Length: 153
Image 1 (cartoon, one colour):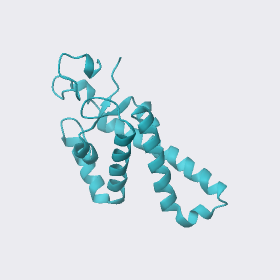
Image 2 (tube, one colour):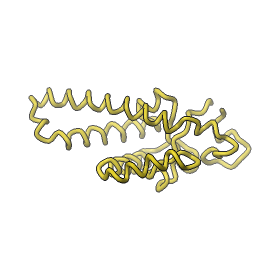
Image 3 (cartoon, helix red, strand yellow):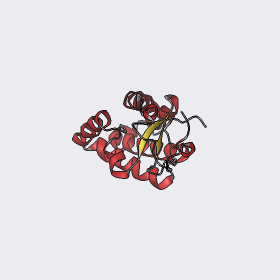
Image 4 (cartoon, one colour):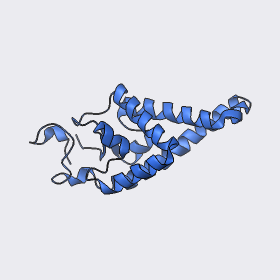
């Protein structure tokens, strides 16, 4: 697997037909990454709850949402992947094939968070990941982004 920029095709997301290996097992890897990231976020929330002398329990859903948002935004802006995604060797790419920048990470995280709090949208997103050629969720389709298997440079 080579980086999309090294192919003879125009710079952009890998072609799902001629470079299918970039999308192999991505929905399963995204699920595993989500579980890992949820555990890490849960640990952060637990620590914040302890540090707040348990007053964070009064607004626990808001604390969880805020910690999750910041965790995802900061990690995706820094390396185009969350720690869970890095563990399973996937990363997010923009439509032109480049890694996420801070703005794209913010928009992607906002879209993900909106999907989570609007549960039917999350179900639609999961279905899209299983059905679309590039295994894109709802936010990915809107932004023109995709999660791919990390290319070998």
